[in-house]
Amino acid sequence: MRRGLVHVLAWSLATGAAVTLSWWGVHTVMAGTAYDPPRALPITAGDATTQESKPLASSTQRAEPSKSASKPPATTSKPTSTPSKSAPQSASPSPTSSGQIKSYDTDGGRAVFDLGKTSATLVSATPGSGWSMQVWKTETWIRVEFSSGADRVSVFCTWHDGPPHVEIGTY
Image 1 (cartoon, rainbow, N blue to C red):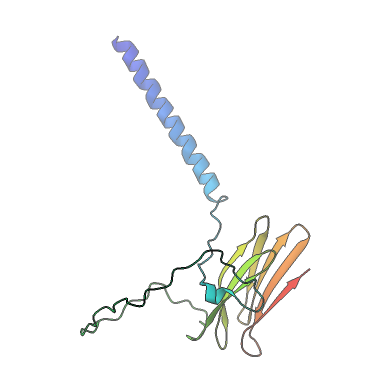
Image 2: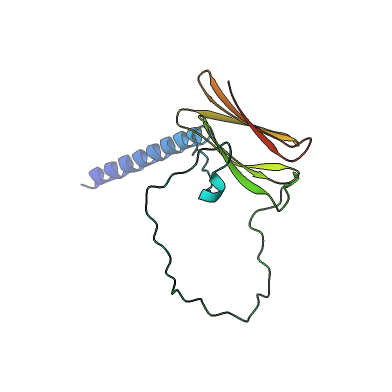
């Protein structure tokens, strides 16, 4: 009985070690190749409709706010500290604080830019289903290209000779 128990224990340890080693090897190899696709930031309906984008349609009825809603009581205390910044500062020039978030929907996907007075920043770019994406950035322009087979859609934002300007080209 004792000999059988020793064999079962040895087999269990060897099997556990083999499974652990196999899992670690597969995880190490796949960690460099598999990734989660980038998530697009939520955009409010007012910011999503631009000259180049498709307007959002709503099929639901929204409830009207009640006119008798009471206002919360005013507080007299003022905050004593300023909130800390959650994102670290980047080394590249940042857009001015009066930037506008604009979304550009194309056949290949969506590109969202923060358009300032003198520069722009890419907020997010999400390819459509079946499309891939590539991004190029310089100090005076950003290009997002969506591709699917031989089809290409390019969203090109430039600001080298004035305020940011976005052009969409299909080829």
